[in-house]
Length: 259
Image (cartoon, rainbow, N blue to C red):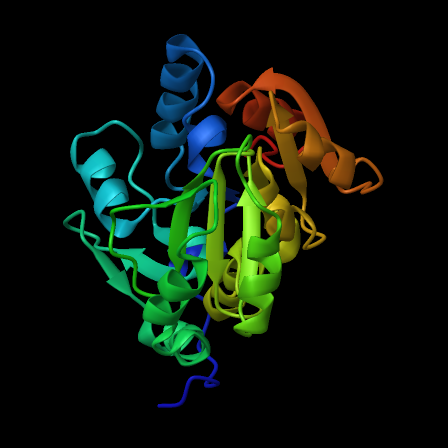
């Protein structure tokens, strides 16, 4: 079996709608009532709706949320800002990385973690996050102290840097982010573009909103993201906050016709 081998369409490919959504500020955004209403709608329509979380969060965090019933159980996860591509177990809440889809990501990262930490040590405005990630290095960012030279340092290492929500700084393998990893997963699963809705709210969602798939920037999105998507006709800029914005886009784009 090679990483380029093709497969027959998966069960999720038969769904009428596949929601590929960011978590913080998007799927986890909105009022308690809005979240309850939208989550209940998903659960009532699981035969027709597939769910993919596309997030900066790690596998442990996502598994715990699903296990506690805080969110509907996703079918798949693109986590760690695109560096994890995994399937959630059908009978449990464990995430299993899809090795053939992650192979190129692992190759692109190599053993960069130690080099990144050494190179960015002493750069003001960055504090390394305590979570041990496999194929990324992530920092909390102080916008008042942050030094832009961090981008040049990362580029010299042959890696990509991503600043989002003016609070986070992620170092990623070259060419890897939410968008490319989501597209790799959708292609692997055989999901048709027109059945997919991509949802996000910050700059680390931009690469997936730019894919050309039906997309929504939910209400309350980062201004820098809104500026980037303003010329993109396929992106619906919602008024509704968080899940209310996702629901608004599903209706506006007529993505869930009555059966």
